Image (cartoon, rainbow, N blue to C red; front, side, top):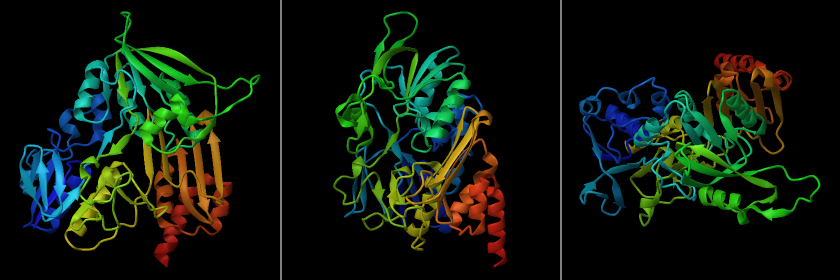
Length: 460
């Protein structure tokens, strides 16, 4: 049996190791397109801070690790999959056959349709090559503009700030990390970052990056920023899709235009020696056209990690699998889900028919020292109850969302001691009973609720 894995990230590596652990005789091949040994993108901030060397980013630190497991790791790109013949067409012109195939190709950073993206001082923050480019320019006192304040952007922010740069973040939404935090939490993170010396411009959109005409910096970055509409003037309704902000959002994320209130805006110019683009990612699925593999935002998979084509599986950032909370198919582009997918994929490639109950939407973020998290349906459900505790002066926030007496989502800032309990209660789908009323009055007792319910489950 020959198992071939396309992608050398966490999903692919864990799948290969799981396959080898269960089957000592199978042939296992990993095809990765980067020239580096398999590594973790989540280690980029630690390298930028100087906490580790490049070798510390590798998923497995022993250089003989894969050889010892008899796993063949090759650097090459896959141009096409031929399911009928069970062969892959590789970029070097050769072919690779397979018996079982796992697609774990990950994702690619989005590029905003903005003038100047091709300039040499403009870098994404995704690969080791990107990191090297950032390191070379993010020197002490350098002026850095980062486009985007999502999860990846904020994860890497700490490493950039640690280098002593003058950092400005431009985010097109009204708060930081808008896809994992509500308005209160997102703006608390923004205020915290500002208190730590980071300039944050929300409701802002970079419109161009040009070489500077003065000696103060390398580039000039033009930002269009929405402001509050004038009270004296009527607020008109406009199609966001018809304006600049809407065009950029649609180009990046797709979807239909929204109807929003028109607002006054202004243009500002920022000096920059380095521009970092962190505006989200898109699943690497373009090469699957014509294969018969069903795709949406990612590769559609069932609970056994199977695609719509026999003997082909998918895992990680490119896979659109079952969401634990909703049962719908979602792309959860985070490393814990990739690792989980890799394990389940391996079991099913071995013919064991093991079903994944679904991946929990979860994000844990360290934004320049402020720890925050969101789990499950953090935005709540229709007709559900919720409770919020806000202590802005202490940089603490706790938001619990309920569906009946079941905890379904949470958002928290500055209360790291509760993170495990929140996640545990959501994944238990436990009926809280009397504990719901207690938590509605005193949300901080969530650890007590978790311990009481888990101990009760053990006794039963």
